Image 1 (cartoon, rainbow, N blue to C red):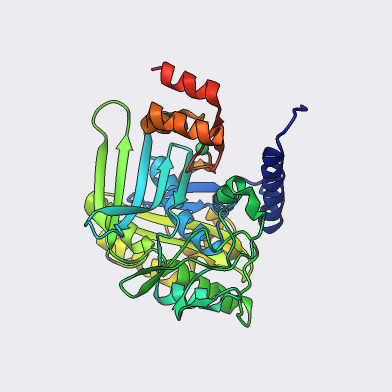
Image 2: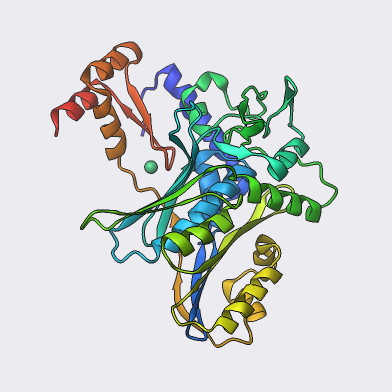
Length: 403
Ligand SMILES: [Zn+2]
């Protein structure tokens, strides 16, 4: 279709294409689906193995995330896949929110990571600047080539801007080598602007792949630590939504989610989340979930716990063994294993602009028309997929007319 484009629009349009290419160069076109399988061990322990590698890459592509924030977001997405499968109906949905203390000192909370899941799909985002980078994660960030110090403080990532920002501020071109200029500091720890560590290749000064992979694992394990909460809201559309909640206490998301399931949902659980990073890109990512059914034999539980301790690096295991079946064959060969479910989760948003229209409604008529007067159109971006909806005078009028 040919249509006359304003100079500004054209610039933005070209910008989007260029960024798209850049990200595909890094992550490639993923043509395989994520895989999830559920097994029953000796009739009393349910094991779910999820390979969410392509969900991670899709999230990274949509949000323009670098490897570390993409890995942390994917850990919550993987939990979303796991929990979403237990929903009863196609329309049912749930949200998993990881939040920390708000920065304004009000005692409130701020969302760090938000994930929404349905039976076979997930979507989510990392709030900019809200990933707490400390300990191993900070060390990892300091090792990147693009690590810079501003006034003696560490900042994470290799510059660049979030894709969506690039789309809007077309003047900034597609410069992913922007200098780092943001600082986020709480209680002496440096926070990483998730959007800063972005869609150009990671340049890590590690001697070899194994060292890089281990450093990355340690970084991802500690990246979402700090005080905060896990909140889960399940909405089946029928009655009041169910809300479950637990505190972030362990310092890594695997242990904190295990605690959530065990305490808040009263399902004794173990969770192992991980990914494999080869120094350049993430080659495998996923999760391993164990839930003990009522009446399970204590001895059996102890054996499973021992096996989990032997796992070591789950991301590396997934990279090497490749499939959930191979992992089960390798580690649980002595058990009576029955495959009870198999599905192919994906990253899917499916927004149709309703959300953004609501945001404009909430802005109110006066403010909406003020923006229209100044800018000529209103742009609103979907948090989950980055899709930008543009509304001109005619569409804005319709938004306020329809109810
Ligand atoms: Zn969307």
